[in-house]
Every structure is written in structure tokens, then in C-alpha cells.
Length: 123
Image 1 (tube, rainbow, N blue to C red):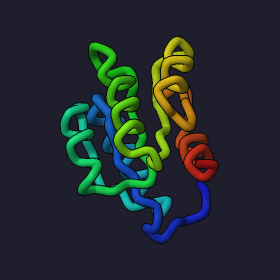
Image 2 (cartoon, rainbow, N blue to C red):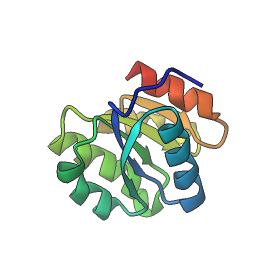
Image 3 (cartoon, rainbow, N blue to C red):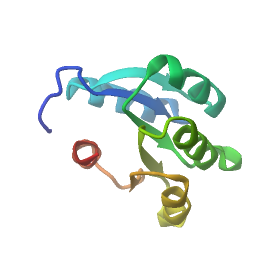
């Protein structure tokens, strides 16, 4: 895995798949990130950002009805310093995510934990 952050980098998660969200939270915590929020619905994620004050958000953009891409865009609009890693389910969402303000995009179907951690290191 990558170097530890000693809890200094605050991360909020939006993931509609509870198992993947739980696994991602554990991996990030183990790597030294401070996971300050875990959400499975876009509304809860967006309404918690001001209180959580994350530096990075990992957003599942494959949520129903394009809620993930919309949440990404709203998060960036109201929190312009927030770096967002978009996690999608294929290359089809890449252009929409970048246009919405994602700093990076990974295909969650075939990205390993080390790739997620490496990408977060670059943000």
C-alpha cells in the first residue's frame, strides 16, 4: 500500500454499494486517511460536507438516475477546494465526471486498492 497519512487527510465517501463502501473505508483508514463520512445516498452526502470538511471525496457515479454525477457537480460547486475521485462502472462516464469537476476517475470494476490509494496520493 502507500505511505500513511496519520489521519491528516480527511475523506468522505459516497457509495451506493454498502459492501464496497465499507471495504473502501477500511482500506483508507488502514492507509492512514481519516474517513469522516460514509454515505449511500447523494442527499446525505451533500448535506454533510460542510460539517465533515473533507479534503477528498470518493464518489460512486453509478448511483441511480445519474445522482452520482449530479452529486459530484454540486459538491464541487459549493466546495470548490474539494478534490473528488469519481468511481464509475466503465469508461462511459469519464467525460461527464471530468466536466462535473472530478480530479480523477477510476473504473471501480477493475481497479485495485493500490490504484485507489495511488490516485488519492496524486490529488
